[in-house]
Length: 604
Ligand SMILES: Nc1ncnc2c1ncn2[C@@H]1O[C@H](COP(=O)(O)OP(=O)(O)OP(=O)(O)O)[C@@H](O)[C@H]1O
Image (cartoon, rainbow, N blue to C red):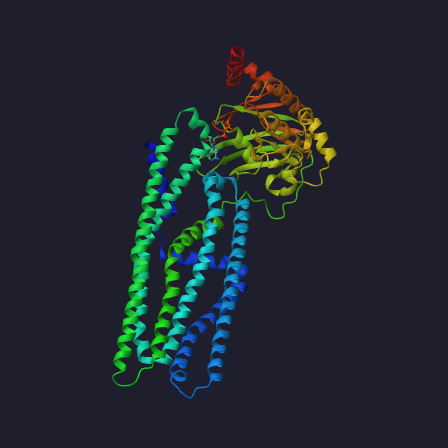
């Protein structure tokens, strides 16, 4: 029940469920036009061709009218006159078909180029955003925004063309009709307000139905993502039936929403247009019939007017059928705009920051840190790591160990105090040098699609194969790599699912050490690793730490007994500090922690 409420709340909170204000819609339209900037020239060319096609569409019935009224009624007309008419008519048709081809080709091409640009722009923007942003927006939602939402921009730009096409068709056809029969053309103006009204009504009702449908689709996607991501837990806790029922319920709601949409489209659009077309034709026949009592009405005029009227309704039909695209474009544009306008950037360095890390001395001076600017997580944190020293951070879960690393690595901005490296304010350090000299090894090392080589080299071509082998040897990863059939060329899947947790750790050690960092930051793995690999890892860590300043998060206190300084954290404050011996002698917080772990280990 709680789960159902959660998905309902999610559906209600989705952008689809909320109507977007007219002012915001205009801003989105303007943004979508601006995003298409790299394709302006191609769009303009396609629109120009569309303009010429429109004029031909209006002109052809006019020539036919003249032909029928003059040539066909004139007994003295020559074969030459008829053939030249046919040639002109045929040439215009062929030219118009060619223009249509170029118009479609250029416009679609222009939309593709614009789409490509938007995707690149969004991706670049995501990489400029800080961790704080990713804490707030789920990864699945971002994939939808960069991939699916941008697809609807494509349709939106197509709709834009059909709209321009329809407006210019109507104007041009009315001009031709006016020259053919001014009274009748003015009478037919009634189509314009009626059509605008129909579109308005349709838009008003369909937008609610459409938004409802899209919010159900979002909920359905979310349910699917949840089932795939949580498949292990679902199977483990026998949740399959519950998930199946919940999915079936949301799927049914989506079906119902789609059904309402189809019902509405088929009720409103097609029949309404047919009705209007019928009424217009009746009006033409009535008007010309009436006129024929006072003066002769030529057959060509009737033909031309019925043709023109159809030429007005065709593009209108096109626009109406794509109106749901407008809703799609609005919401997608709104969501993409939110990413592009987001200012949750990575913490910035000071202007002209170019100081380099040379020794690796680290100082925290009265640092306060908060993720959201409201709850302070680290309070008045101070410590110094002299070059080559190892500082260990210990404490219960949630005590602030990872947060200390997050502030030191500049993943998040800290609010108060100072962090100095080699005496320089951390904000004055050259960002490229900073990332290269600070070697971070996380608990969960991410593996990229490629092979072991590329995962160690990380696409830095200045690193040689020899250096990769030396780094692997240094961290004791060479033995397991050499035992694989393809050694360093062994393929690695995204996430490293083909490797064990310990092997991934060793590769990530090699990845860090090959860059020869000045400072090592370790988040000790808590994953269960077999004793042999564990010994290899501990050995590698010892090796890596020698001659490097190391800040290590230690979950097992036995691994940091030799640290130069141990900081015991509790609720973001240092409650004890000293060496292993000093802290044991104190018989305080650390002593209790150590005792507890020793007892746990003895019990195993
Ligand atoms: N990205 C985040 N956004 C907001 N609060 C966070 C974030 N990460 C951690 N916190 C909060 O900061 C506090 C300290 O968490 P931190 O991850 O630093 O603890 P830790 O000592 O590393 O814990 P563990 O040993 O479980 O990894 C916790 O209260 C946690 O809820």
